[in-house]
Image (cartoon, rainbow, N blue to C red):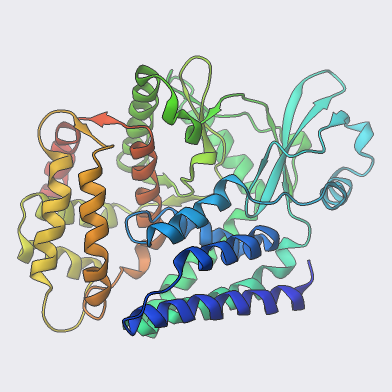
Length: 415
């Protein structure tokens, strides 16, 4: 990866993004589709942190203009793979003579993402495994890329987000990206999760192969399955089974183990032939302190009660608002959007009325940004929960969220 060329291209993409935002801020109409196409073309080749940030943004379906969100979503499905010779260099660096370890390795990647790509391989014993290979040179350009991402994030000042808040958001994002480069840590996370959920019949987690893994290559036993993003056309029973497993798992992660899988894009999940939820990628697992979890549940409690003053108090405790004058009308509208999903009985996550109302609120959220600030220490947590929510939407889940949340809300009130 050529650092100077990357910097120039990232700077150009940032300038183009800033121009679109400024045009909208001044009352004009930005060409979001053209901007999205430019970001896709540039970032799918650059890989790394900037592409990861765009993939994160693509999960914010309820905030981004639809034309921009659709183009960014392509980065999850159609990212250009790195040429095989470059990947082979990384494998040689890890293994030396590749042929002494593997009978064959498929040159065409099984999956391609922002920080690495996955190739099937066959051992000399005849077992099919997968190799998650970190893009060569990525660690060396990480800090340079992050500097450019920081410049792009600086555009948030146009929406009256304070510099201190932007700095805190950046540091949380940067820490998460640095963690994702540590394949030793991901192998340990896979082993921990396999032990944790070994008796759960609804989940499958690939087994890491420590003897074939290293700092930049993670080897796992192959687990086949239909990607979650391809389940939208599956039969209803299969979708509901996977959705239930996903919802149960997220709840247990948060309220039992105080952790959360923080990279929820659809390519990290699948459904195997038995209808079980397969969790492929554990490169981003974040701790969730009890105090933070209770504060979020207290905000949900106030929202479901449609109590704007209590919502404001909860946001203030989380560090999520500052300035004079609570946007009470915005709170009321937000509560009216969200509460139907938590009414007694099964609720349909594919109900487009909820998403339409959330999208209609977006301009009002931006207009109130000088008062309504994102909590600096919950960027990854909020992003992860939002991504998991949209996965449930894609599955057309029907869940009794009222029944699920009542004991959790009672727990938060007791605190």
